[in-house]
Image (cartoon, rainbow, N blue to C red; front, side, top):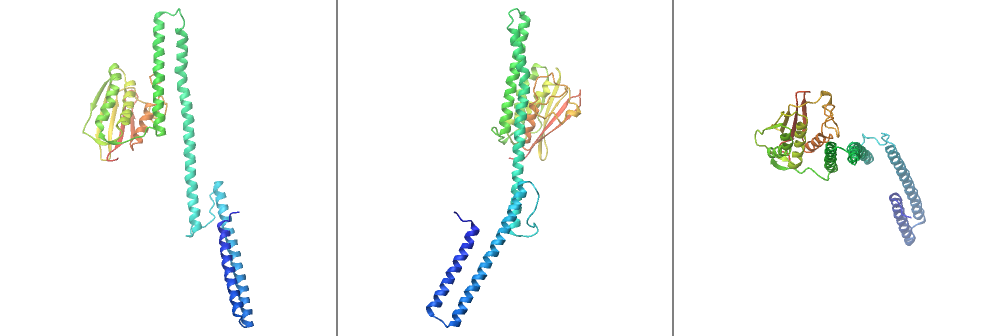
Length: 343
C-alpha cells in the first residue's frame, strides 16, 4: 500500500533514530567503557527514544488536527457555508491556503452560473425559434391546401401564391438571421478589427439598404462629416448599421427621410441614424434590443425582432454602445458609438 507524505515523514525520522541508536550501541560495545558510562549511555538512548517518540506522536496529533480542520473547511465550502476555519489575520501557510481555496470556489461558482445562464439562453433560443417558425409554417400549410383546389379563381390563386412566397421569404430570412446569431454568440464568427475608414463602412450599409428605401420612396441622406479611421470589423459593423437603417426604412412612411451623420469625439466615433417615422413609445425603449422583441405599433410590419439585438451585440463586442431617442409620431434617432484608438 502506498504511504501518504505524513507517514513517510514519520518513517524517515524513525529510521534516522534507529540508525543513530544502533551506531551508538555498536560504539559502546566495541570500546567497552566503564559500567557507569555504559549505563549512562543506555539511559541516554532510552530518554532520546522517549523524546523522539513523544515528538513524533505530537507531530502526528498536530497533523491530524490540521487535516481535520482542512476537511471541515472543504466540507463547509461544498455546502456553501461561509465559514473560516483558519484566522485570516494571521500570515500563515494555512490561512493562505484557505484564502486560495475560497477564491477557487468563487471562480467555480461563477463558471457554474455562466454555464447555467448559457443553458437557459439555449433553451430560450429553441423556444423562440419554435414560436417564430410556427406561424409561417402554418400559413404555408394553409395556402398549400388552398392552392390544391382546382376550382380556385385565377386571381385568388395568384394572391395565395404571392402570400406563400412571402412566407417562404420570411422563413429564409429568419433562418439566415438565426444562423448569424448563433455563430456570433458561439464565437464561430468572431469580431476581427483592423484600421479602416468608418465612412466607407457606413456607405456599405447604406448601399445594402438603398434598394428597399428606393422601392418605398424613402430618401436616405448621407452627411458623412470628417474622415474617421478606427479599428473595427468592417463587415459586422456594416451589418449592425444596416439593421438600424433597415428598421428605419420599414417603419417610415413613403416619402419619408432618413439622415445619417458621422462625428468624431475625443474617445468615440458616433454614427447617428435619424428618421421621421412612427417613433417608439417611451416604455418600450429599453426593450427594443431584446431578441425577437416586436414593438406594439409595428406588429404588422415585416420582421422578427432580431436586427437590433444583433446590432447591439456587434457594437458592444467592439467596446462600443448604443443610445436611442424617440418620440411617437416624430421619428427616432439611433446613435452608435465606437471607440477611437483601440485595436
